[in-house]
Length: 391
Image (tube, rainbow, N blue to C red):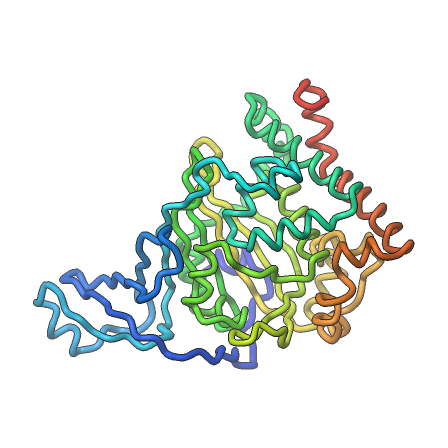
């Protein structure tokens, strides 16, 4: 384990319990094995025409002798039984690179940069639109106002000045320096960790490649191919209750200039066959951004580390703002054990914007949530206003 791993992800451990693999039927794929022994996999039923190709790099197990002896053939047809213990890659020709036209999104007047951002990360747009539609108007207004301020700054000539102003103290802080390639190798060897990586075109901020480890799929109770397909086709369900997801999203957007973001979260999981909620988990989610010489994001790596209830409670004491962001303003400061026990019920019945709209107490909580959102976005709104970008 390299020093870099311990620097980025403190208190790493190998989880004593084995990860339960989802029950999935084996799928046979036709694989072309070329002279350079690289595997180019063509799925029998690709989800959409946006999938250009999916390549698999075998980083773990040595090559079978029978394959080595046949490597002189230009092409060899073989059957591969899933799952493979490898990282999986998906190269994308993404429709998000153009103008996104959706009647529901247009009607809600969601900032354009925000539309592109949430479509990039692979979540189902219908679920996202429902969340914004059900959101109390004061919360939605505060969120859109702050997001719009960020968009105006990011697309103006003042972006560099604002970034320098916000990072004067962090510029000399070397503890956040990291290399995603080195970190990927370290994470791959840990049973209690999983990751996914997105590469982006710095000019358009459109994703060009997605990579997932087998560990992250098992964490989320999915087959690796299913997770990769859902990411590529923007068809992932929300991994938290609606209110928790909004808190995580808002916190991440407010930290847009940070190259490393830590959140300690509760995640719900679903049966891969029926879609019903199963056993939830607590996890530390670390997002790291790699930038080019101009400061533009070119690659994002997300590392997920499973936490015990005791570890989650410790994080709440030591770094409370990273634990289920924004939920504290709703009065929800429950411990790890209680969160696990109530996760599925919360997701289905109590932690949605529709439930806030249904009672006087919920509307009071919505007002507190509005104030918290305004507080997080205040630096962006104030700067955009001072430069005449926002009126």
